[in-house]
Length: 144
Length: 384
Image (cartoon, rainbow over all chains, first blue to last red; front, side):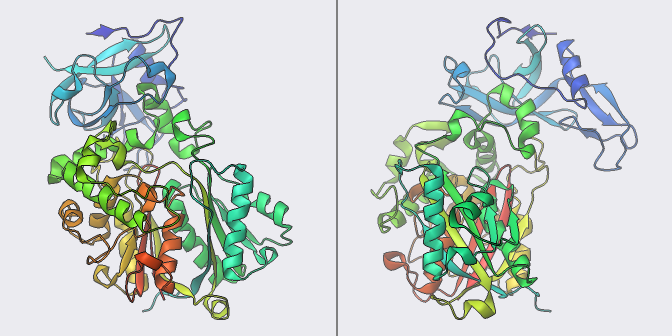
């Protein structure tokens, strides 16, 4: 398991996710450095982002199942000008769309790959970024 | 069977303030000016307006009622489809006018989007359809449309071989159109090299791939066809109109096919309602928040096959004199950004025959598209 820490708890100035009752387990798992994805108990369909019901069978029953954390880059963009002041020292930075092995995607940032080395289909794997004592964000690195 | 709403309502008034970087007046003053301009064009006392569609980030219907002393508004609505809202509001107007709920619907958008609150400063309280992105993607640094859509554009380049030269072709073409327009913010001609040398905003979007930020307001008034015949200008009929929402409407990230927009659903409905097809369109106003969205919508609306939008814009087909002139006013890229209400105004001028230097000769049928939020789409077909 890989951890990076980009935030200093006292100084973290970027927006933090506000968990909802439906997404709270997702963030709690990340805090424990585990990526879990919702899967419908009724029909087995994975879904992302977290929400109450399955759009295929309408079941509200679901389980949180461990995901491999591995996937490939589906697409990306490179941000060249700051929008939020907290990113002022970091741009340019790439925002990647990662397609996980389970079929759902995450939009996140990379920790180790310069944007000019990104390519569609590049294998990546999750790393856990403890940005505060309470919040861990998913990020990605080149798969080993 | 003829669609029951085909040609039942018409655009009877259009109004646009100057488009600028700094209007020098308050948001509300600008909005009231736009409202009044549309009424003047229609030859209507503002007090006669009894239906109002006001957009997100603008004044509310009550502002207009209050300031114009409108005595009896019977219909007020506020669509939440971002840039797809103005064209979608034509569908709302057609339905309520045909139903006899009211007589004149005024649909309006705009504010001091450049000198006032800019998008890059954050949007304050996110509208409800943004909540998933606010939770999961804002913490990654994703805030603005250029960031939302850049991965779609790159995916299009990957799947179909779309090039930066083709993005540039959209930008250069529309700047040429804007150069002919007295009320365009950017009128100096540009080249493909200028496009390539403009700075990156969010790769693959350069500055000249991105729409303007504009102080300005545009408004359109619609009435039933029977009433429209006796008004100041010849009626421009709403022959077909539809909206369409993409798969995974709250998250582009989770969309299976990232380059398929809501207009893929709206376009066939609008064409069927109007009883025409892509080949019948004389002039088009396509939502151009980015050069890429023009290319993608040419495909999704059916003007060319999937993946052929890039070659189509590069061929010159979308330039004045081409087979399908697109955004003959300069669009959001070069005229000004009022969420495409300016496209409706321009289509109306084209069909009235009053588009001046940008007039498409004998234009009879125009198509408009809207694109907003995470891929919402709307399509309207107007005819004279």
